[in-house]
Amino acid sequence: MTDARVDLRSDTFTVPDGGMRRAMAEAEVGDDVWGEDPTVRRLEETIAARLGKDAAVYVPSGTMANLCAVAAQTRPGDEVISDFEGHLVVYEVAGGAVVAGVQLRGVDSPGGVPSGAAVEAAVRPPNIHHPRSRLLALENTHNRRGGLAVAADAVAEAAEAAHRHGVLVHCDGARLFNASVALDCPPATLVEHCDTVSVCFSKGLGAPVGSALAGDAGTIEEARRWRKRLGGGMRQAGVIAAAALHALEHNVDRLADDHAHARLLVDLLGDSPGARVLRPAVPTNIVMLETEAPASDVAERAAAEGVLTAVMDRHLLRCMTYLGIDAGAVRRAGGVLRAVLGESAPPS
Image (tube, rainbow, N blue to C red; front, side, top):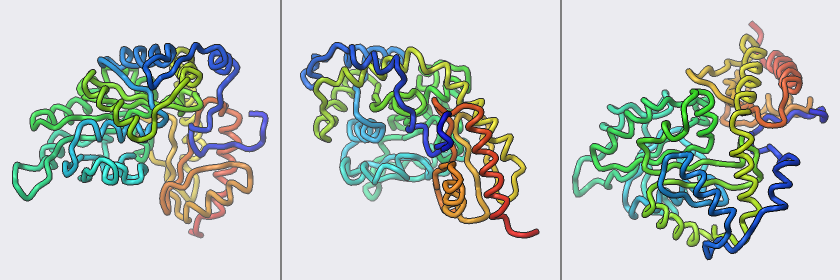
């Protein structure tokens, strides 16, 4: 990076490169609400095929994609099972409750997804006093579990347990391509047993906006209705869909660079006083630090030195690598963070 500031708050801080901007400028467009934007249609067909699903719908954000998935596959009063630390639970403003009228039931999933036994235990038995268990929501990679990439067999175990009880399965795959690269496993294989899956184009893939929800044709048609209901209908959206197509064509394999840069940061901070680095079984581009001092204090001191991080909890700090963050930037950030954490560590 040429700027002395190193921004590790989120991989959403990617910016379009020249090739992506040209693709956007030259995109063929139409009215997407009328189903007449050829670039959007090509994106939806491309991502559905890449994920092994029948159909897909392009939406403005990952939060909307997840909410459309929940609303399209449940009825008010139903229950959705999710990890306590899942994005759906922590970061989506209770949209499932407010908009879809569902209740969330939390399970502890330190491995990124619940085990089959945990799913079995969470599904409600038929009883007039209980909500109906209707949907299991998974996440891959898992943000608050340290960017953990969850293997296909673990996803399959959880999904098969849900399906035995007639419970549908949604995967929040905002960073699914990070998981695919880290595990050297096709994305379609990772979500083979999921009924729906959302993916985000505006994180590590580097597009400026947009996500997609994929699944069977009937569910996606219902999700498209929910997109309209939520105000997510778009007109000449081919301009931004072109960026997502460019990202799929050019920015998937390079996610391995982000993972390598995250490993470099872990190496630089691994024995740093004042913090413990979380080490997921299969890491990706997220580095989580459990700080002894308040995370907000550490973040403020690092920011004063030009290194920006994200406060995730009182003593949890997140750093993310992405397109535009090179090894030099990581080394600079690591040096600043080591110094700040050392200053914040209590005397031994």
